[in-house]
Picture 1: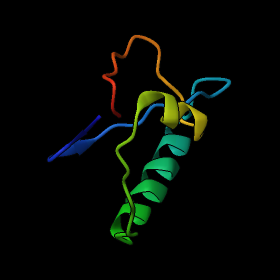
Picture 2: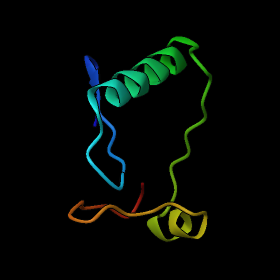
Picture 3: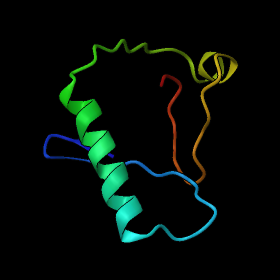
Length: 66
């Protein structure tokens, strides 16, 4: 989820994370965000996005363009 006041990302991990690991990941992500790395977005047909390597998330609904 990306919103004006928050960012949430999900990832798979083989076990529950320790508090120290969570703090380390949060620190890493906040540092990366703080670097304000430029990015490029592209809008394309869903089939083209899949061909380019995009992965659809289970339970999400997508239009013709993503």
